[in-house]
Length: 409
Image (cartoon, rainbow, N blue to C red; front, side, top):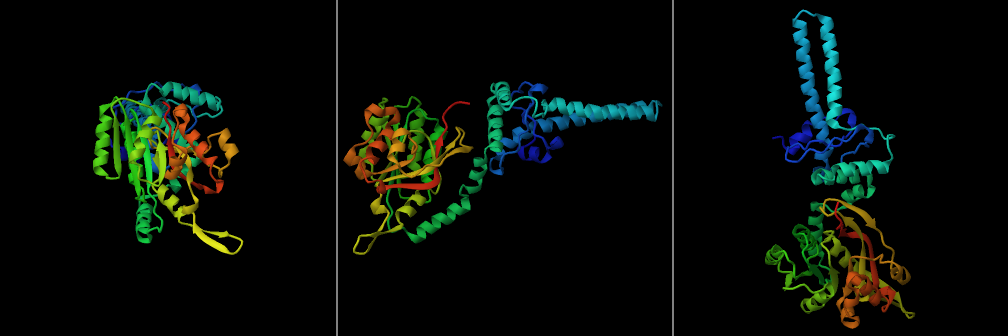
């Protein structure tokens, strides 16, 4: 069986196009219907190298098949030509057979690819719909084709893979944090509500916290009566591996608000984040926040300048964010937020996630309310931010959080 690496190395793309696949290289997946020539499929370029494993096998599959089929056809036609020549038909017959062979190569490649790369054939929207309709019954192909298409057409994806911290940077950041030892090192508590989440997504979120370069954090995982018993088993494994994890298990489902309220007794952090979906943090998220909290501020008191730090002047923190697809392999849709404005926040939940509330604010104004189960975080953010000085609200203008896309494809 051809490995993915061998497949990529040996693949040749005729005229530089990337046709829609009709066969998966390892033969383990069903073959989708051939897309009709009139579909006018646009070419899809390979995704950035960091997600090559997601897109390259799909983008190159048809070309690989085309080359194999074409080569077989060429060999067969050449054999015919040789046999005819040996039968004394002569050079003319050999030339005819060679032309037939070349023609066969072209036809075979076109048939194997199953597409005609003609941008003017149909409108862009029709192209998307036709490809989706034809490949949707084959999730493996459909999802990888979708990722490849998005990777080519979304400039933010390219930006993300150029700016996301690499392992070497993270190692250096962790060493720098250990060396400088922030004078102010607050603890961050994540209240993570879980009910029948995908286990891999749940684990991914927890791992994105435990992998933070800044280590002063706590994770409280609340399993609110999940019907899948394997979820609690996985939570127990996570807690055994990391002593910053606290587990709370409800045998019967309650509500998000009730679950968060009951778990407050275990909170030891100075800042609290409420999380109700398996999102992801950038690995330097907390480090960026703590670095900002340690910045020195100078105030003119009228009789002289007074120095302080941002930590003592901050009760409410939020950052910019992005969206991550359900597979966790593609980041897109950046949400670049403005600094705090009450009127804008009242009209639209532009702050969204994440929000870190100082614990004393929750004690003073109360936590999430039962009447706002589906939009508890917006209501809580509005209620608290409208009652404190806006200068105590800190916006970190960097993308440090990825909200999980939950809809089905």
